[in-house]
Image (cartoon, rainbow, N blue to C red; front, side, top):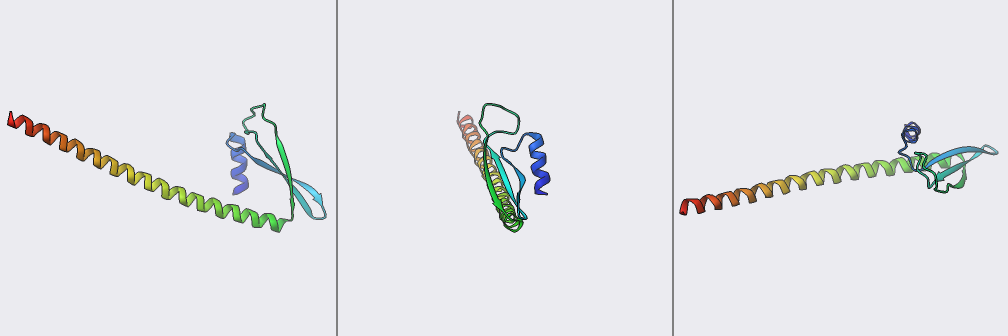
Length: 113
């Protein structure tokens, strides 16, 4: 799922970073990480590449860590969005109450005159 999503992000120009796997010999490979240039084709920014070597187990572990971190961040985002929604509801209730008090005061002043 992660690779397909990355491919979709790359095609849509949403990804800022992407990686290429290249053979490094002895059953190992190197992961070339390209960053610093939006994938929408804008020129002018210099591409920087760093090579990270590792075996499949190391990368699988790292992938699991990143997926776990992504899931935690998604959970936190959902909680934050819910908190914002609740705060907006409270703000609306307070404003409605203030409007009601102002209307009541206006009505009271009209009755006295």
